[in-house]
Image 1 (cartoon, rainbow, N blue to C red):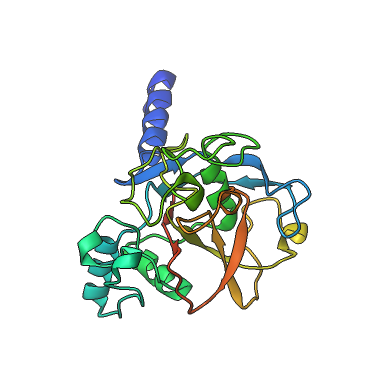
Image 2 (image 1 turned 60 degrees about the vertical axis):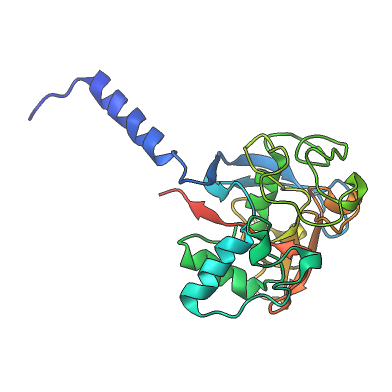
Length: 247
């Protein structure tokens, strides 16, 4: 048997870990860990401890240009607000976030690019950017350099990546558009949610949307806020971003 020095084995293992943790282009490595999810005393989002595994997440929301490429390649219909200037949706706003897509559409896009939607727990962990107990990704106050919402003086979407990122390098985790995630919506799900990598209820008519949007007020942009949307419903204040497992 050939002898390989321990130091070489350690270096090789370290190189393998570094390679595995190197995120794909346009994505950020989210380290995973345990955190307090939800709001203390919340009605449909009571605070509870959750652990998520490391994963990758898009640094920005999916854009009009990216979604158009998907529609052209798959002959899929364009969103209901396409070419509506009021909602910055269409080819004239290539780098603005896509809006008006349904959960069904978002899942299809994610699969097309070899990704998936983040779970609700992954989304909130990533949105917090390593901070604990804060209302927004960068602190407790609405800052127009960080959050695009009505309370910050905005009246429409901005090109993705315009505002400052959070601690994990993610832009617009609060504001710009609300985001569809993997989980079905269950009002009482937090009370029965498993601790490790929860995936949401097995049944339900609605899907979770997280984060605030340009049309939302300050309190609706708090990190812990959640709501539900029907499977085939598109909204002018709702878009999405993708996640990816670490092999």
